[in-house]
Length: 340
Image (cartoon, rainbow, N blue to C red; front, side, top):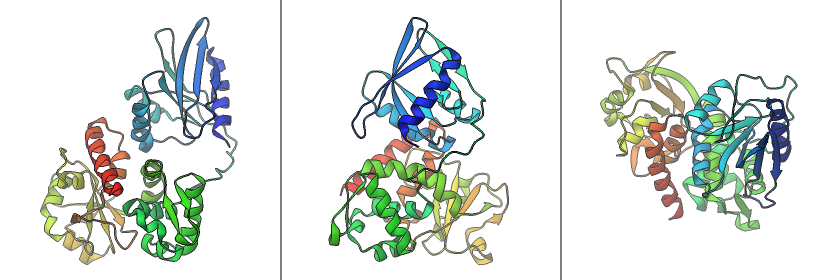
């Protein structure tokens, strides 16, 4: 289903609230449509940000997109269905929205509309043609970590990403279709849209890859916080024993943050690993234990930590404004590394 069709259906659903919408299509790839909403003799103009699927883990990415817009009309987030939880998070960020189920939050000088709690249509939605699975995001990680990896053979790229060469080939075709890569024939590929792929990685990690990697939740006995546990086991962290992630990793990397979440990426989860990392399995544990999904996912500058690309994606999955400054600093560092 196309983005334009989704926008049209969301605007149609808004008619029940007495609001009429029209679209001025941009006609250019990467540009945003202009949306004009009118009620009685009042109107407001927006720039549309379309997200077919919108979850709490995507809020920070959408907020960044809205902030990056040039001065002018406010952003209007448009999605298939926005849950009550996601709606609350959008409103907290000052983001207005509409969806195809009839939920809306519009706050203009001339009119206010606030509708939440409506369910999505019962009938199943058609599958998204460019659906990206977990294996493709493992490939995206490798390409963002080292853009020169785009020149590798498909088989070599798959090995580096920890996926089959068939999955690597599918990922390359998908990224090429999205305009993130260009096909150079026998010379492999070239990464042409770093920002686009990075934006995709941030939501793809949270929505698709992280759930696949989850092994267990664990509790660090005798410590009050994940950050305290991380400091206690710092000397035992390594690519073989376990790599630190989450807010605790950002704190270790000297960002101005007091970490309240932590993850650890392990090659194996057994009694020896638990003992070394001083963790006990617990469904309500404060440490997320995840599989180390590729041969090399460590931070090149600190082998105790997972790569900053993963930490950045983890922080973006937490819809908390207190992390905005840390996310911005970490993203700047990641982009400068990719550009080298």
